[in-house]
Length: 337
Image (cartoon, rainbow, N blue to C red):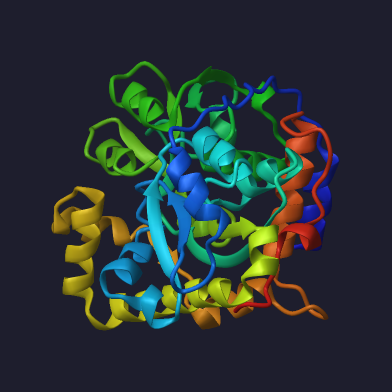
């Protein structure tokens, strides 16, 4: 494993990245309430998109787990990473759920945050789909592949795989498009392969010409979603942070013990049918208390999380997505687990 990490850090890539746009639609009222949040009577606003990996927080909201632990949380739906970034910077939200590599980008931009909780890892939800005549990544050399090169989980994951193989994006005819569009482009026969997510992996399998070369089930802990909060909030309201973490654990336990009711809650908030949510749950592995402690590790024996964050930092510097590296110790705080 050590050899892989050293190899990953040694490969330089030359890719032009698109800057993240700013802007957020949060109201001044939210900003005002956020500035005084942290006690049980005040609102703590956390942002997240409609990704299944973040959805257990809705269980904590509906079942009262946040309040059980003395914290009044409002979940704000923010689909755009650029919007959540600017909302966090402006203190319109105090915490956000997103990928670990995105937190690295935010920290490098000067937003003083710490990841306090691991939420989930993709375990089959992301993958590489290709025409059946291409069985491996190496066999796609010179072929037309669809990929979102502006960043994000699938871009990060694909770069991880390429580093392992001593390859780079220069080895392919890359077509830049969002992950969903990439999947659609493959299904319509416009590209030879696509790096995308569900449901496009399943749709590719249902064609007579497509298959999945590999998916994220083979790389647990690489595409990982975490929850981060502003450090000024953490310092001022440690009990609130502890309450949010405890509420997440309660939600994961509830999902295990009452799957049908939990699925109904998730489906309501995600605007999907329960049967579809059940399928999506198979593509992620949630971090419970034991999983978090193992992934974070200890001060004397740091877990795999630190390696993933360092890898993200080194990769984004190489690709010029960020100007300076981010020390994993500065953006990881496992004291609330």
